[in-house]
Image (cartoon, rainbow, N blue to C red; front, side, top):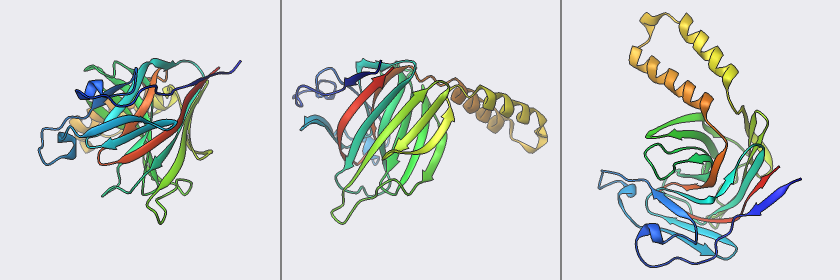
Length: 243
């Protein structure tokens, strides 16, 4: 039987430190920067309940989640994102899933994001390392800002068996194996056959680590939202459906 859980907020933004300024039960991890010229160096990030959903105005990039909202096995996580106005350059926003220890040094999650230029990206964060599962890719189904500067896109991640499907506005833009074991074995065999003299050992090590991380990325865990810096985004219809 399909079990549907609507992930809604119940209170508005509160005064006080950023960690206390999230809707009830939600937590925020802000990207920190050591560069004073970087927008992620500013604390000016707002995450509020608005209408039937949430509104994020950044400031720095942030990851938003409620520890009570988890999904395991086969499930779908989805939300509708409205970019209220274009950013000065392509910044990404979207869904987080398979999350664990998001507040800690060993944070781990997958995320599926889109940008105003009609591209999407799928990434895996493991601790301080981030690598692409699917590099930035253009797709016509992603709506770009209209004459009023707004764009609305429905994002969805479907986990079914050993497959993860990534959808925008009902269309699958990318599909990949969940475990990636076959891809891992193929890549490692290919790496063994390459002339070592043609590759930098450090680059080769990093490449193999990325392959292993991608292959061992988990989909069970917390679900949430990711909004990069300098964005004004409204989120509605955020929910997880489990089977």
